[in-house]
Length: 121
Image 1 (cartoon, rainbow, N blue to C red):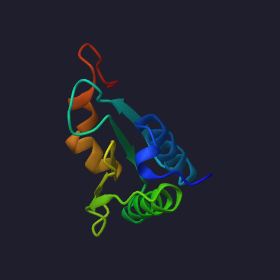
Image 2: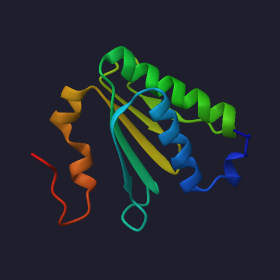
Image 3: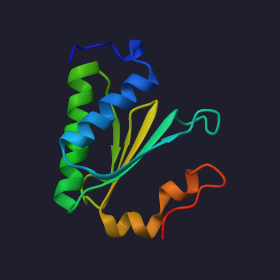
Image 4: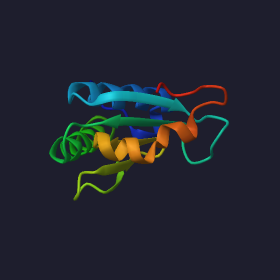
């Protein structure tokens, strides 16, 4: 991929790069959530899982590195040390990478699903 300055990248293009990175690193149950018009904090949120603390940390680290290399964009990262729940703030897209048990406990994506949608039991 070519490098595009961070300010030239639309939130949709950034989302695509993030989804590709997560797919490359075998993130599971990836759910992109459109926040446009619903939140001022970001345009999109992505929630996904890794099978272990080590994989969660690796997925987050590789995503941050790829975005820096491809776009020059630096991301804020919280929680990488423990690998239970890593939050990556890229500006326009916020990414949550969870261990499955932690994701089930917090159910972050349920808070942001559009009204009328219910999660599968």
